[in-house]
Image (tube, rainbow, N blue to C red; front, side, top):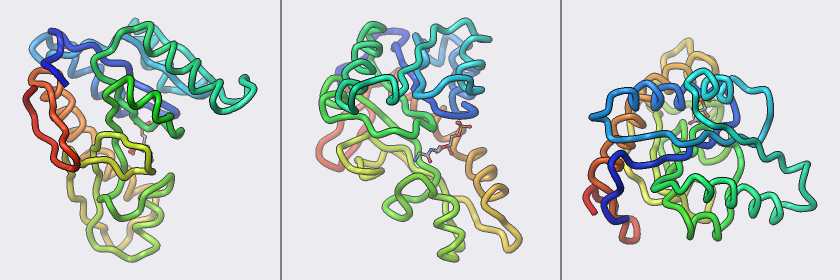
Length: 205
Ligand code: GAR
């Protein structure tokens, strides 16, 4: 991506509690961070992620798959809604839907996943890591491609699995590290731009 505007404009998509979104909202309050969250979108209503956006005065929109004839119609509507905010970057922050190749062609899209890719892709990263018995796991920030959590890796952070962890304690500990990684890297993308060549990801336009 060429060097974004200052501040760079981001649309953040969420499906849940939105603590990663909140970390980005808090970071963006400092002008030197270089990011403006211009909208928050969701695939469901009544979630804390949307409430966080409301409290921060950020416009929101909701696109629920069940309100559309099919998945393509949903994706087109999502794309148009995002397009209306003219983002330089789309951040999936706990967004539990896959977006289409057409969406990805249109927007530089990054996603954060609570596992160390390429291990444990999908919706249950912390549970799958725990069940496998790994001793370290973590989080991965990547440029979204057509696969499930397969895109080029921007950054990763390692978290130890403790003997008494259950899915909740492990995921909560991952999320602490994940939020810090997300904030660091999204800020760099906003300020410096990013270039992606195959699986090689570098900051700078
Ligand atoms: C985060 O851990 C994120 O990595 C995960 O959902 C959580 C959202 O937390 N996403 C996925 O598992 C996507 N495959 P939050 O709503 O508190 O930011």
